[in-house]
Structure formats: C-alpha cells, structure tokens
Length: 502
Image 1 (spheres, rainbow, N blue to C red):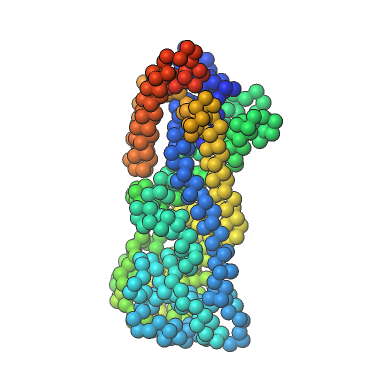
Image 2: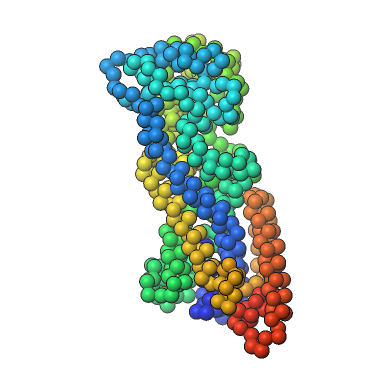
C-alpha cells in the first residue's frame, strides 16, 4: 500500500503521471498498478494486519516459552545422571499403559530436562503428550501436550494456531493464505510505484525520508512509503515462505518442488532395503508414517544415540525415534534449528546397531537447504533470539503500513460528503489506453497467478465486482445531483470514475 493512496488528491491530480513520458498514448501501466494496489490494500488489508499482529506475537514465543515453562524445561544441575533408558521407564510409569512411546529428546545442556513423548488417544494430529524428566534425579517436572516437529508447548501452539487459522480449523486457514498470497503482490506493486515516485520527484533524497513540514496526508504518505521501502524484502520473504504452509497455494508449491526434484532428502528406514543395498534418499518424505509399534526397549535409546554420535550427530539437541513399524530402523535427528548446519540424521538397526542410512545437511542440494532455512527463519528458530527480534520488528512494520494506508484513505475522503468512509479509488478505464500486447500480458499473467494461487484469482474477481458496483453507485449519485447549478470537484471525479470503470 504505497503510492495508490497518494493519487486523487488536490496536490496530486489523478490524470498526471510525471514518471511516464508524454506521448500520444495515455499512460496505463502505472495507473493500473495504483488501482490494483488500492483495492488490495483496502479489501485485503485487514487479513494482512491480523496476520502481521499475530505473527509479531508468535515471533517471540520461542523465547517466552523458556520463561512460561521454566519449571518443565529446566532442572537443578546435579552431579548424578540417569541413563535415557531409566528416564524412559520413569516416564512410562507416569503415563500408564495406554500411551505409546514415540520419541525422546535428551536434555541438551546441564540444567535442562529430558522430553519423552507419547502418542495417546484423544490427541489431535501432530500432537504428543510430553513428560519432562530431571535427568539427574528422575523427578517428573511436567506433563504437557506438544505440537509439531518443533515441539511447541501449549502457549506457542495456541499463538501458532491463532496466526495460522484464528482457531477456526481448516476454514480459518483461508485467512492466512489470503494474507500471505496478497502480501507479496501488494509490496511488489508498492515498490514499483515508489520507484516511479522517486523518478518523478525533483529531489530524490527528499522523497526517501519522512517529511515533517508537509500536510498531514503527505506526512502519512511519506511514512508509509519509507516503512514500505525498509520492509519490502522481509515482507516478500514472509509471503513466499508463508504460502508453503497454505492449503491451496501450498499444495501447488509442493507439487512444483516434487516435480523439480527439490524435496529435502530424508533417511531410508527400511531394513529390507538396507539388506539388499537399495535405498532412496527421498523415501518417506512428507509422510506422517504409520503408527508406532510401541515395542521399543527403553535401554536401546542409549545404544542408538551412541551409534549416531559416532556417525554424524554432534549436537546435544537431538530427537530419537523408535521404529515406526516392524522392519524399520531407529532414527536419530539433530534438531538444533538455531544453527543452519545442524540437521543431520542417521537411521540405525536397533538389533544389530548397524547404520542403515544417513543424511547430512552439508550434502543437501542448495534448494533443499534454502527451503529448510527459510522455514526456520519464518518460525523464528534460525539464529535464535536475533531472528525472533527481527521478525517482531518486521511484522510490526507490515502492520503499521496497513494502518497508515487506511489513515490515508480516510484523509482523502471528500469533505462535502462526510458520511463516506474514505476517498475514491484511482480513475479506472486504464486498459483502454493499453496496447494489445499489454492487455494480453496482463490477462495471461492474471490467469497464471490465479491458477497457482487460487485465492488471489478469486479475490481479483471480487475486486472487479466491487469496482463495477462502486462505479454504478457513483453514476446514480451523479445523476441525482445533476440538478445542481455548479458541480463540485468530487462530482467531476465521480463522473469520470463512472465512465471509466475498468
């Protein structure tokens, strides 16, 4: 929401675009972008604002977890130490026979607890019941439900669900997909309009910083454009990575990555493949896997971890998963997301203690590395607190742009019509002055984007309907006021808009 709302003001006539060369053909591309930016900002702005606000809160939750769940996550440092097997047995006694052991995360540092996770009836998909055990004394310090591969505790999981779906389930996910899909488009169009504004300004330096000695409207516009220029790259990153979690656009992204062979390699846990020498680095990727057998021997956790540490596991933050079904291997995976090089995985035969397969982040294709790092950055996990603070400030910047955009819209409302919520959109009919190849390019691009990001296509159609309805209302209003002796500037603009509906 950058330059669109700067048009249609007494000091910025809608029919003038000084960034375009004066030729016989009426400028069309800049006005078209301003019109798109206007409608997207007004109609999709609330979704972006909610996503930015909830995202700012979520960015801080990894750090807040350490405070909120200090008792569960930490324990007094002790001179004694229990084996993983002993800690697993203590956790099993705590949960009873109905829970199935699914994973163990040993205490990464002295003063931390071991997290032992179970599957149990009544939990939602991707949820686990976690028992937090003091590795020094065996004290059970907590019993919480965790969510996802990141192991989010209840507070972070609640904020995550708010950010993702407003706690409305799958229907609510449409809001976040709409926000992520349009955020990239809005900021890209805003960037182009900002560049055009710089080219048209007499003094470029004055156009790139907030102005204090201007009208209220121009001051708000200056802040809007300045903040937009600062956060544009971060907003594009959040838009691109956010789409990967969406229902419709995310599915298309997944199919595209699979078709191009860009999926992240995963270990092959099949013991039969290991015995025959066969393997597939992508086997099982993206699958939730079958139910766990529940037959894991607690004492095996220590032995499997020791094998993995001799192979490629060199960090304290790991997760050990017993076989998902008969004929499969144990898996030990580094989960220290704050370091981009940590994420190695090894599969171990629990009977022979032989390595079945391994993956090393250093050997991942570049696209797979970028995908993993992008997701961790979006979640505030990569580089720890620094990542979280940058995301927090970035989200606040995006939200402030939306608020400033609405403030400009309010300031542009006609003074003779105090009941109007805001100013009129930029003049329509811009495609009438476009060359045939421009119309074709716009049409093909719109269809392509609509197919890849379905919610963008649907909302574009909604924009057209709203635009036509607004034009009809303005035409009728002009006819009602046709008996006035003298037309006002607002009347003239309404007449033009009614004739030029795009």
